[in-house]
Amino acid sequence: MSDVKDILESVLHDEKLLGSRAFRDKVYTDQPIIKRASQIKTPETPQKIKDMKALAYTPEAYWKTSAWLFYTQGRFMEDYTDVYEYTADFVRYYPTYRDLETEQLRGYFSWRARLRKGEYPPAPIPFVYIRAYELINGIGSEQPQERIVLLKRLTAEYGDLNSEMKKLLLRWTVDYCVYEQLDPQLVADTPEMLYDDALIKLLNWDESGDDELFAALNYMSGYPFERSRYYIASAERFRAAAVRVFRSVSAFFRDHRKKPLCDKLFGHRTELNCYLFESAVFYDRNTTRTADYSLNAIHSYTCRSGIWRCDRYYGSRTRSAQLGELMKMLDYLMRERDDFRYKLRPAEVSKTAAELIKKELAAMDEEERIAKAMRIEIDLSKIAGIRAAADITRDKLIVDEEAEEHAPEPVTEPETVPTADSPLNGAETAFLRALLTGGDASAAARSAGTMPSLLADSINEKLFDVFADTVIDCSADVPEVIEDYADELKNYV
Image (cartoon, rainbow, N blue to C red; front, side, top):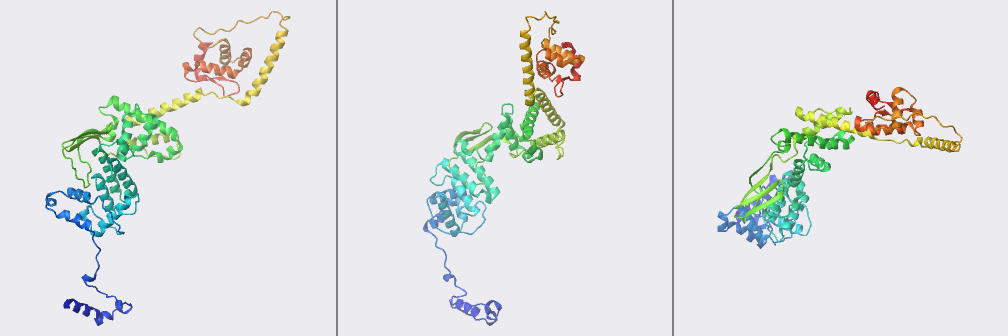
């Protein structure tokens, strides 16, 4: 003890040290500048934590795994609560209770007590990992369905602290659903299940609706076409084209290739050994179990004597770069066909895929042309003229009826009769003949008691099944026969 006092005295009365700027410019109270170790107050360790730490030094702990020790200590502390303010941050890989100091342990159990009250205060990343380990190991009074909800809430509240941690938490959530054989709908909103759901839609392309198929393409495509300038300008047209193109390419692979298109884009389906709760501290208490479990139609598990196997599509399980190239090529070709202002470089796809895209775009253009040709537009501005003409016709008929008794027997020309296989009636045939021969088509219409535009529309409708197009152009004041069909129309007069 005298040696310690001598050292303190020599330090505190050193003239050179006292004359330094560090001491000269400062004022000190009568509190000692240097303290003995016995004078430094250390935080108290609760007896429960002391007892938990002692479990690591029992004879059984020497030959058991670290996962067993974590589970044993966790069950010992599952009801423990503390009130301790801990604001420091630290880093631990695969953290367990054994790795934490007393202050960190007290901080963790205080933080966990607040979680169980529905509060989610800030916390170091190791606290989040330990809480996740507790949930997947069944430590606590919560039921399995409750633990799934708590895992998802833990991910939502703290997942953004670390992207790798978030990925692991999401994976362990699905693994826990499998391990406890819970309802798959509990994890339907996880990336793992959303990926499977989109893949199922693409695999069943011939049965999926257009909206379902497009949503799956959007989720799985490596090319973010929803941010494309062309998509923003022509969303409906692109959506229709994307669905048609994927169906066309899928049908080609079905008919001309050994494997379907989705195998090329997303890998193949097989069954392999798997490890639930990989990268987690997990103690499996039932190593002899037998189980069969299915998440969905393309993702299932079996367990025999504690060995798990998983049947699913094995690949990158991320957005497909090849599907992205297909969608990018579609974007490029649609911009070229529409002479879009903002150009795009062509994507790297096979010649076959490029030709199939061009074929579908050409078919869409043809369908739009036919639909436009079949569209009937009524000019409301001409209704007044039609009514006036109808009034004149009515007055004329009244006068003709009054004079009919005294009128001489009229000499009538023979009515024009259509050919045997013609769908046109006599008035339509006479009107068409006048158009083809340069006659007075308006007079032919008047003699039939109707208007030229109405006769033209009637002829277009009756002959559409034969020509798949309108044969009389009504855009001018007087209807005109479309020159390409003139020779064929002569057969009808």
